[in-house]
Length: 73
Image (cartoon, rainbow, N blue to C red):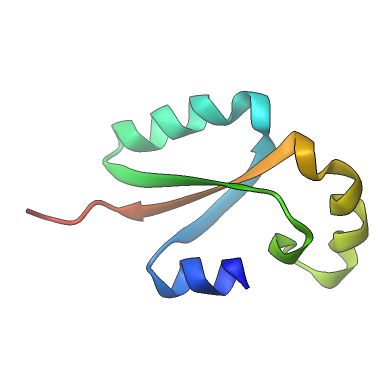
């Protein structure tokens, strides 16, 4: 499952947002020093089982934003 793999790599799920607005939040989190990852919304990314049916209908309109701190160099 994508969600568990990302979390095991240190990514934190922040929120689900309309795909058209994702760039705003990517820019914001990058300006705060975080790495940002945008994942297509799929039913397996649903926070709860009862959310999956609705996500199937809206998957192409939303994305999930994940962040993690940048590695220190």
